[in-house]
Image (cartoon, rainbow, N blue to C red):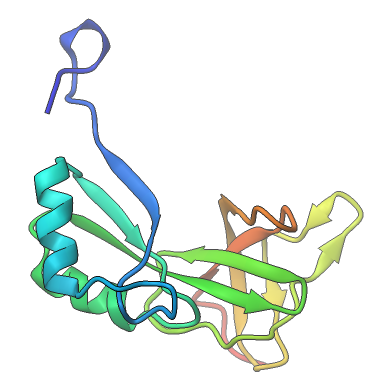
Length: 138
C-alpha cells in the first residue's frame, strides 16, 4: 500500500460493487473472491450480490480485509445498492420520493421495515442506497 498525499496515511484500494456466485451474474466462490482481492491489493470491498447478502456474509467470515455487507436490491424503481446491511432487504420495495429526489431517511417499505439512506447511488434511478436502521417496524 502506498502513502497518501504528503506521505500521510496509506491510500486504500476499495471496490464498492462486487459479486460472488450467490448472484446470478457472478461466478466466483467466496474463497476465490478473497484470494483475488488479496492479489489485487484491495483493502476494502463491498459485496453486493443481487437480492441477497449471503455472499457478503460468507466473504466477511474469511477475509483478512474490510468487507462491507451489501446487496444490489431490485426495487419497484430500479436497482439500488444497499451498504452496511445486517440482513437482506426484500426485493420490490418502493423507495419514497421527495421533490428533491429520493428520501434519505426514514423510508418505509411495505415489508413493514424502515430503512435509512446512505450515500451510494443507483446508476439507473439516482436513488439512494438503503441501510437497515434501528427504527422500530410499523
